[in-house]
Every structure is written in C-alpha cells, then in structure tokens.
Length: 230
Image (cartoon, rainbow, N blue to C red; front, side, top):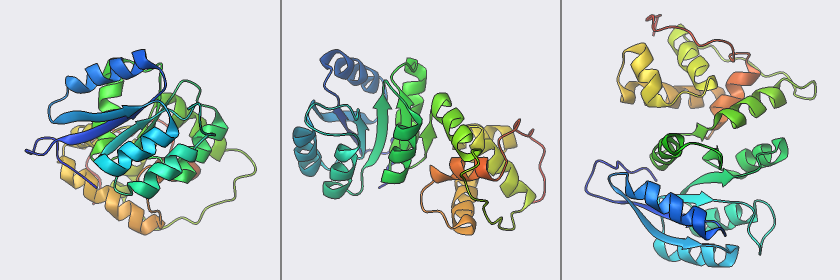
C-alpha cells in the first residue's frame, strides 16, 4: 500500500508503544508532517492488533517490547490483520538478533529510539511511501552480519553500471530522494532502478536490497555523481 502524502489523502499512522511520553513525542513529530494523521495508539499487542484491524493504517510505528507479547509477535499479527500496512520498528535496543529477525519477519524499516527528530521524520516519510529505511546502527549491523563466515556466497546477476551505482548508494543507507540528488535524476527514476534490482536479484522487499548489497561487497565509499551507462 503506497500513498503520496502530497495528495488529498491522509497517511494514517498507528503508534504502538507502552511509554506514554514517547507516544506523545512521536504524535507531536507526526503532527509536523503535512498529510499525516495519527489514527490510534496502543501500549499492548492485543489492543494494537484490534486498532490496526479497524483503522487499516498505512504506517505502524512499532516497539517490540510490549508487556503482553514476545519479541516480534506483534509484527506478524499486525501484518495478518492489515497486510497493506508498512511497519517501522522503533526500538531502544537493536541487537543483531532483533535486526535479523525483524527483516525476516517483514519489517519495512528499523529505527533506534536514540534517533534525532529529523531522522525520525525521514524514516516515517520513507517507510510510509514504500521505501525501506535502516538507521545507521542497523545498516552497520547488517554489514557485520553478512560478512560473517557463516553467510554463504551469493550468485551475482548481471547489473549495468548505473544499477551497481544505485545499489552501492542503497548499501550506504541513502534514500531514493538522496540518491536522485546525487545522480541528477528524478525520484521516480531511482524507484524504477530499485524495482529492476528487485527483479534481477529475486528479492521481494526493498529493505532486503541493503542486505544483498552488503553481501555483494558494495558497502564501501559511495560513488560520485558521474553518469555511467544505464
């Protein structure tokens, strides 16, 4: 489910966290974003699932440390009752196990609770429009995990130089908007490249491209804004 915040439709957001002060803070931040509306919040898994079932939000901001659930159970239940929702994991403790499990369970983004307001806004806007978002801590953890000896080698598809450039920027954690600015192309052009990359790599979710790029060794310094072959 993708929605353009610039349209007349509101991006419906549900906040799931058992800390009232944090819920209030996130609500305030979302209130500063044009086209976004908080339609509910919950501090327990059962309540969150029911709200998501009724409201069918576009975005769910989810803390996995809820008192009536274990780990990522809320993510699976929310995806079941609201399959079109994008889920942004918002956690104060991002262990490698949590990151790996969240990505495998279908999280669309992962953000640390230590993030600054500007990054929270960026993550919300990215994930709600169908883009993947991994905070710096998560991106670094992914790079460390994929370079471990236990990770099997991957088959390399044939990518054009431009596709490799875009994939390298994705590995560096840049959003489509940031990549477009670096390459001097439109936002939609970058999204088209993401779609092509998903098709060529056989992946199904944009967030998996960062993991794939790391496994392909494209995690070094990002390339410049030169325009290689497309």
